[in-house]
Length: 248
Image (tube, rainbow, N blue to C red):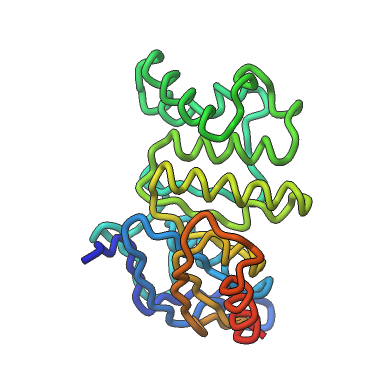
């Protein structure tokens, strides 16, 4: 039996607005198993980012609970890594310095953290860019640095909020393939947000289709396709059509 490591129960979030309370997340129940790659899929502005913020402890829920490894989530921490669409790299630090930042803050000895950072720099294909500053990197390369940095910090779970949404189509496809490869090599539990059906199908073990606000879970799909996946595989295309119809 696979272990459930992330569990939310009756999770809700409302915000005060000039016209009154606005409910964004409405009573969501969700379990995520260890090393599972779960994609939250739905239209823009349907509450997916709010879900990521609640699950990662960046925002408190209005009601309901989030538990990670049996412990109530009450705030962010190094056990929870978060990657957003806009990667906030430190512009005054090189690739190596950005990637090793977390272990450095935690007091890991220099030799050990450099070896660890180099491992993840190699893993994301940035060998030779260790001493380059972010201003010299393309959008896709910055995202690779961001992914390496989060993995290097050794979080228990990763939250990714449309990390490839700002990239051009070709770079986005390339980054999907890269993330799929990295996920197979460095197993982690991942909760990934996207409104792109191909991206969801390419990466997910399970897709959670979310309704528009107030957001609830509309449908769940377990994706049985082996990795790496082929965008033109007949079963891939069938699932794409089925989930798109559900999403509509």
